[in-house]
Length: 91
Image (cartoon, rainbow, N blue to C red; front, side, top):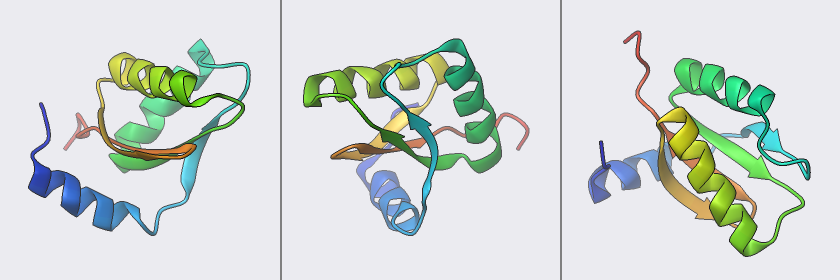
């Protein structure tokens, strides 16, 4: 489900006040991190992820891998913070 520009704008506005829920460290994307991301997205739908210890290209690859693994959409990525969205399955 690709997000429209209007949806992305609304999510960026809502996400501005959010704090990062999950941090991906220098060890990268493990199964435990993916499980935590999946649970957090189910609960929050819109969340910030902090990616530390990675270069620009590696951060982009990690964000893509997160979205692929969790079925989420990237709303915005600035520096080491990514804002992602996935509609909750229970709602």
